[in-house]
Amino acid sequence: MIEHTLLGMNHVTAMASDPQAIFDFMSKTLGLHLIKKTVNQDALDTYHFYFTDDQGTAGTDMTFFTFPNQPKGKKGTNMISRASFRVPSDAALDYWLKRFAEKGVANEGISNQFGTKIINFHDQDDQQYQLVSDENDHGVAGGTPWKHNDVPEEFAITGLGPVTVTIFNLGHMQYVLTEIMGYKQIAEDGNWSLYEVGEGGHGAQVILEHREDLPIAEEGFGNIHHAAFSTENRETLGTWIDRIKQYRLPQSGYVDRFYFKSEYFRAAPQILFELATTGPGFLQDETYDEAGIHLELPPFLESKREEIEKQLTPVKTDWRGR
Image (cartoon, one colour):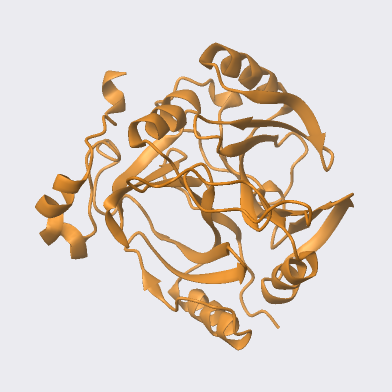
């Protein structure tokens, strides 16, 4: 029995080749708020950028590591293959097609997936994304668009939608989602299947793509590092840590990231999941107006600031001068 149901998506973390380029794409093209400009706490020579809604709400975070000298990732099976972003309506997709044309963003046009209109697109690293229309959505609410972006509010991104996992051993991944994590399968279409948890809806969904014909994916920039799912607080996280241990999946145990608490576990070969709390949040150590402009470090890294800054390539993230 699951004591505390997962709330849905928390964040998705991907790998990018160039910190300036990914800032420009996420902030200037997609209109997301860089609410935290910090470092990977496990690799201090690497930026960690958090792009969110206006206030940094859990479930709206698309984050990036920019490992120096990392090779380009290879697509295949056994990978988290696509992140998605929610927009309010079908009409919003029409707006984004025009914006993508103006910005030179490669995309596949409007199509349908599980009865929902979508646009698949990618960035300069061939990182795969999707816009998903909330026209007929239910369940987990989206966030609030960043008030300083140049996208009309009625068309702007409000948070994360379903994450897609391309998998070789479908039965194992289904077991992890349904028996361990509490997801329910709600639809199937060929080698694609759709699952949701808690209140459901786009903010609480996972899509599995069953592919045994592809080579095994290889980690690198242009690929996703991990997907994180929300739990309320440290107490509920503790029950999940105990649950993951019971199933003997490889796991990290409790991790304090300062902005949230979490645990990582290996859901399948090369598939890294994280369970993360919805708080304390990103505005506990800097103001809303300053968020994302300067390098911010959690207290336990502040003494290493000079050493850390020497290893990082300067990136212009001050949106106020755009």
